[in-house]
Image (cartoon, rainbow, N blue to C red; front, side, top):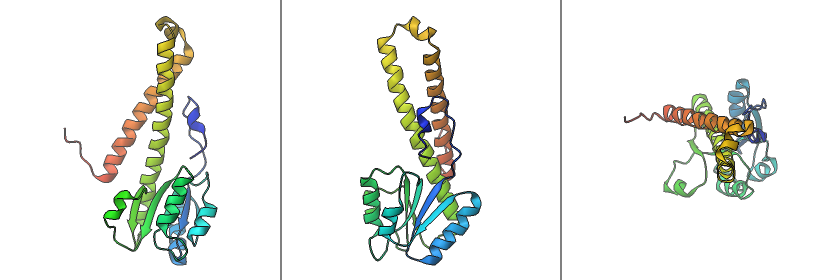
Length: 197
């Protein structure tokens, strides 16, 4: 998903499958997650340690499913290192330990408690994909709004009206605003929120 295509005004999505890095010291967990996800079209990489995770994570990885308890480096340490590198990916901690209040300060995007069944795993991955799509659209929208604002300050309104480039810019802003509204609605549906109005 880090294809750089968010720079274009046409909004065309990439064809690359979502790449998921599964990090767990238990072979059965790695194999199970791969068996659940690969038939759905995901590109799955698996590693058995925190050090191996740090070697394997790169800009092609979209989602990391990260075991929190590993013998060499904890998932928390690996998470901190990935964030420090500014790798653009969504990260879910996966652990046999019930969450405590410490998760409030942990910079993860989701949290799964083992054992994780197929439905929970797929639902989490789909939610993380939505989050990734939302983040990319939000970043692009922010960039395009800045450009629009600069042009509105620097150019006469008649020049803006006559500009095909400015119309394409505004059309893309409108598309992204609608896309973000739709993604927010999907998040609400997944999480079971209801519109209070």
